[in-house]
Length: 199
Image (cartoon, rainbow, N blue to C red; front, side, top):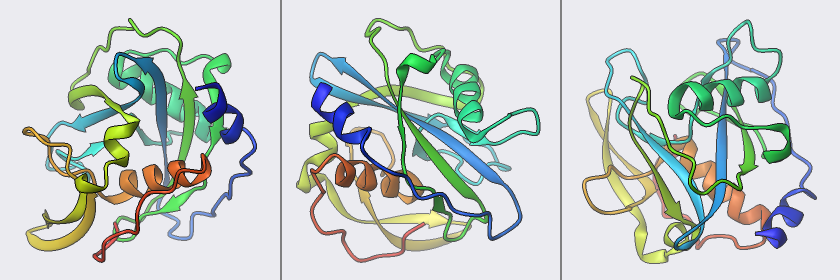
């Protein structure tokens, strides 16, 4: 973990302007030492007709509200609200490059945190159906990376993603892009991205 954190802290993030003028969002990529090595926190969003990411896998996070002083503050607030984790400044590691949604008009910032309390209990709110930790090595497994067919506003589209198995949906879209970027920053880039539609 120390090597990963030191490598991440050398990263100079690229901030993007909100070219859509329709809002910004912020998410938290949270790491910990777990039973299976270094793990990353994922959530599955509850299904809701007004949520464009309804039912998808992602990181804790959401829209930046007017009361949020910065994108960082929004990531911390959303994490506390959605999974009950109170992130401290000492947990903060780095900000990754911003990404624009391809089909959703939003600019998303991603902040990396490393928590020491492996026993921290996750307390989901109504926006989250599942919250769980995934080993980094599982996300790196090339056999889990493939083109998947997902439903997007009633249409079936082929997208690159990660199949985590079980009853979980495929991890794709902006979260997939942030995960690929994270591994590139730490010097362990994932295998070539399969062809498909990035979202």
